[in-house]
Image (cartoon, rainbow, N blue to C red):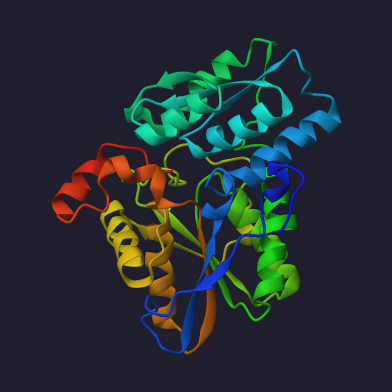
Length: 310
């Protein structure tokens, strides 16, 4: 496959079977490997879509600096798009982000503003909103930008329908809400019987990259009516499922992917039969410094607890 530009290589990620992860032999689990995007996450899709929508609308011009709050992946994706298109970028990121993400942001030339880690992405949003009052900045704001769910409706969801038209369930993590909203809309147009399921962290449990709707901020782009079910998942279950995914399937995915796998297994255990697609938002290599795959589970849990996950 050949592309004229790295941005054209975004999307069309593999859908692979996970035969050793399903608790039910009559239910097949499938992984949408979003870590195969150029910067290693699904956020490449929305970064490109948001920037190009802003260019078309005349909101983003060469003299303005892109500004975005992020826990890491959206910032990295915007950094690639900004560098390729010639824009400056400032990201606001919690100060407990993994070392890999900070180095990647620096590598692509982003200016980094740190927010308090104990306030999570909500703290980054607060800082970015204050900065955005300066007209020199343009903030795409992934949590409220309609290009976010549209990128998943026209891209991610379309690819799933193409590759697995017999899909019965779709499971993804609840972050900005863009993936669940966009993919859910496309799948339910394809077949109104497809069930859309969210993996939501327990309130107060820091499964970063995911968010609880009870934590005081509901992303404006999130359309909860698309959801059929929500399952709560904690950080310990997420970590264990991520490690099992690598051990049992050879799939090296980010830690929030474990939350999705854990929920998909709970769904599969209830079904007579089915085809369940799990969206794995990124690869595991950005998290090696957290020791999430350390031989000792206790060391892995400690390392992950000290860092952002997505």
